[in-house]
Image (tube, rainbow, N blue to C red; front, side, top):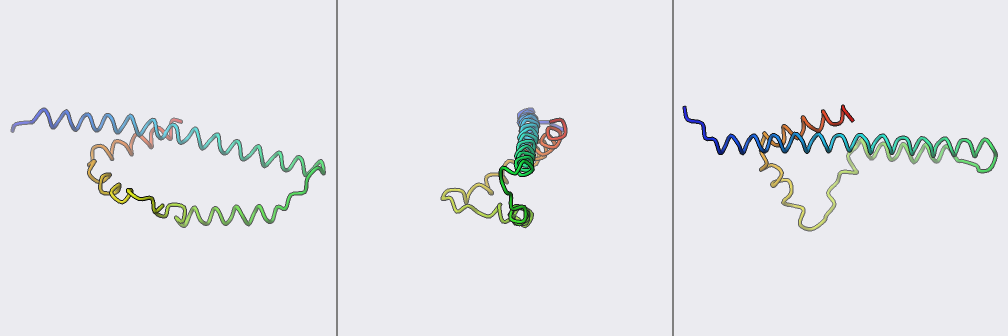
Amino acid sequence: MVIDISSLTSTATSVGFGGISGFLIGYAIKKVVKFMLVLVGLVFVAFMFLQYQKLITVNWSKIQAASMAALGNATSGQLLQRTGIPGTDHLPSAMANFGIPLTGSLTAGLVIGFMRG
């Protein structure tokens, strides 16, 4: 059995690149999500404090309706609809050509990076 070194190095390179890229993307996503959640929490607490001090009046039913509508749109996939930007029709086929080693290692790195972040 003859093993072609060039195909082995190509696969190892794509696995390494995918794993490192996935880890960095997952790590960054988790940091951004944490920052956004803290920011939203602080704004929420500020609104509650200002309402308690009777400086503002907050219509909580409107906030609840807006957040439920946004949550419904996010879970139903309406945020991920096609953008209609010209020239993006070829992206799914280009992404499919990367192959299993790159996408598999990218996914594994993304999960590990998200867990470590």
